[in-house]
Length: 147
Image 1: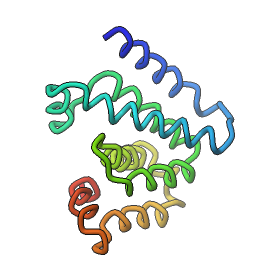
Image 2: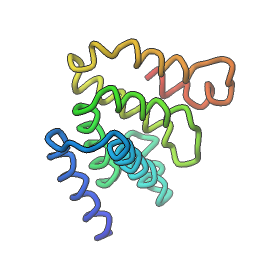
Image 3: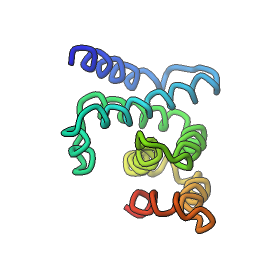
Image 4: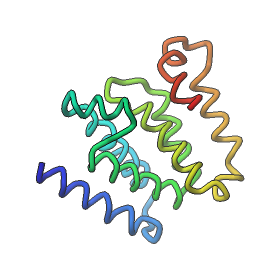
């Protein structure tokens, strides 16, 4: 539990400073993937946590990591959309695909004017998730893309 609190505080601090932090594109993509992994694996640690994930609640680490991820998206929207779009198209057992779409949704709600010029990219990503050419991916992501 203590390790989770420490990670959560680190995510919170990172989210607070990321807009003024300038790093290379590769490092920023890796950072967003790590935060997405923290959002995703935090839900799979216990059965009760998994129930919280389905009901919309989460634990402190996943919420802190999601907040930091949203701050990353606000500081580099194009990179965020590309990274989360790529992650959304890769189905796995840790819910990364669902959390990537959730992160995009939360960024849209929190920074709508910032994302206005990038609506075509976001739409393209969502349509790729619903591509009938990949029925398994479509079935898995249908609820996440339409909510």
